[in-house]
Length: 296
Image 1 (cartoon, rainbow, N blue to C red):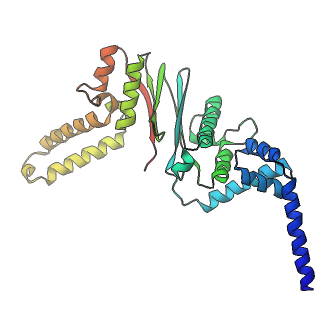
Image 2 (image 1 turned 120 degrees about the horizontal axis):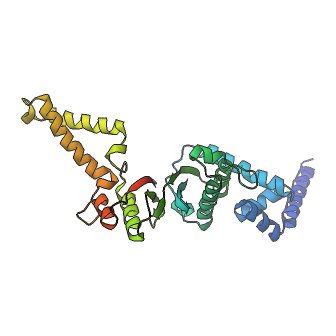
Image 3 (image 1 turned 60 degrees about the vertical axis):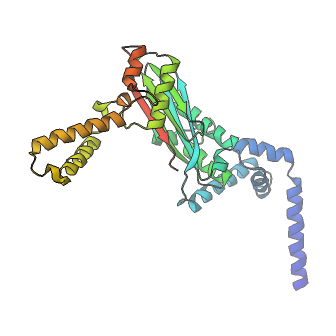
């Protein structure tokens, strides 16, 4: 009977080939537009689903879940940062992947912007809220991200999402699309001022807008480091604790000058960001700020 076995195997191959041939290019393109998956993935899904679009979409989605599971331990250190301003709100989002090749793909950028549009429409409060938001077809953002993994064959994740609200907002994304900032002012300022401040924040990564909103734990940590450095220095061996405290506070002021936005020196200039803003408008200041950068 081995001969009959070979005949049956050949018949299955022929049948499979015939099924493949029945899938028209127009069908593949239709599924591609519906899912964003690659041409070959769409063709294979349609063959497996015997031309049923709904089943084919499910197959592509399941592939995405499989990719996510298999590549869970991979690092998604590439991607794109996108921003959008609507009225008095500014939104920033990063869709991350594994390679620059995928990140630079036009469709990947379009997916990031599509998710951002969903965020804006829902006015999602934070990343967790956004992942649960559904699009017009009833699929959550989390599902859309998973599907993107299936389409690209890479780990894809919503690395960051935030929004700010202020009377006047501005956004800046670096040319490589790997880092960006949204910044809010208490009143309208010129394009030059807004752009310079946003670029400063993007380049210098301040931990807060001003001293008062610097995280308490950060302040305590930096002060403890400064005090310990003073105590370790033999020259300070006989100095009273009160003197060491004052020296530590001086070091802390230096820390604030370097790490809080309004107190940083404008890149390439001698004035602080606060002075730069108030030179244009004495009443203007920064009231909101979010920044994200993909780690290399």
